[in-house]
Length: 619
View: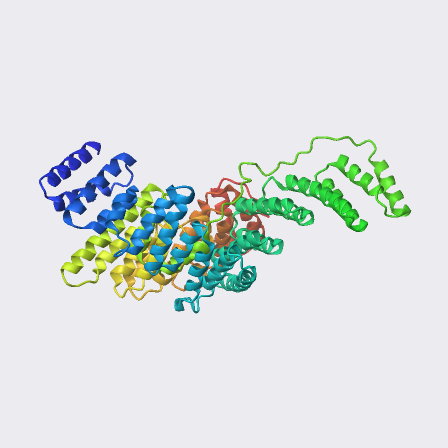
């Protein structure tokens, strides 16, 4: 392969030297399809094709190549602020991310001005925010709020109010800031309910995550607690065990920092109950921490001169938690503290008597594994209050979406290279269509672009694919469905669901193929929804096949339900998938159902248990 690449490169260089840049460009494009090669080799090919584009007078393509390479001076020469303000602004923004101090702020301001000149007011506001230019940022968000496209879009409207509220506060106008934040909170709560009702829990999760941000920035513990409680609830429903505990850890850390000890101890208790319920080993560690935090709650109440009954209740809660992990030494110490409170002679005598019963108890090591430090990490929440508004503003323009990716090193190099390839394909096809006098891109070209977007394997590709799916030609819609097999996101299934109901058989078949390729933990919910809502047996079979490959306990339970209550051929599919289920923890579930089953599914369950090599009770 290396020798073949070297030969191709030599041919391209020779053609360019012979002043045949168009032929050289075609060879470079062939090389650039190999997105897996090492950086310096790929970068050399990009420099070569950029020279070809300049020689051909195709400066826009050259500019995007320079943007990928972070050759900002050359990109700036190609993209002028007068003729191409958005591209010029993007160059400034990427350059600003690599600069520091006042130099970076100046570049961000220049980017913001360019975005505004190009009508991209969300991008302009974000750039002003990065420049710490609160007044200009506030004005930019006010322009977004006046955008008529925002009407009937409560989620996006909530995000604009959220950003405008924060910007107004930074600009010194706290009253206006609070008004916008209250409006954002109201809208987010309403939209989150709507998302959950429609089964879009990941979108509801985004709403709650923004409420977390609101609580952190406004100092409101109530908003913070509401955000965490709802995020944890959604994660539990998606069975993301370790994410649940990480969010508990985050909530616990912040509660302790704010000395909200009663809340922190309650969080520990809930985390312990959850860990025990899902079979994780950290329940005793959380109970021990809960007990220790109840001590801190009691001590704080005493220091603050609070009612003695609150102190008493905190120590009693600590005793309950210490008891549950067998830490009787600290049980005795808790009663000793209770006996020293001013609770009246009768209570004090009773607590002294209890202390005496633990006289022979000594401090021993308690087996209570804590949640490990390497998992106890503070979450870096994605800036969805910006990202979702940027998506709304770009509105699925695949050219602009790819342009936003190619220079952004937060994406992996392979994704950036593929985005550049999609963009070059688009520009090449646009030039051919323009030369032919047609203007509009051919349906087959759009289908290829759709599949290229899927190969990005990035969430940002979904909105452009949703827009391409609206095309009248079935070739384009089929290309969209084929692209979806690479996009492992719950949102992907919204498009698949539409494809499964498409008028075109070819599109429906492509949607089935995509669904067959998508089996990952977050897919459980949308796959079960498709199984229940679609009447066509083939759709149900494919959904079931993907569910079986997830190999989670929820998937195993669902397959058993299909085996027991559905008819053929679905029962046979479920039987086969259970017999090869790749998760030994499903065996207790199978045993439980085998004990309950007295109908036609009993024999199948017995065979499955035997196939998995487990002796199950047959009576």
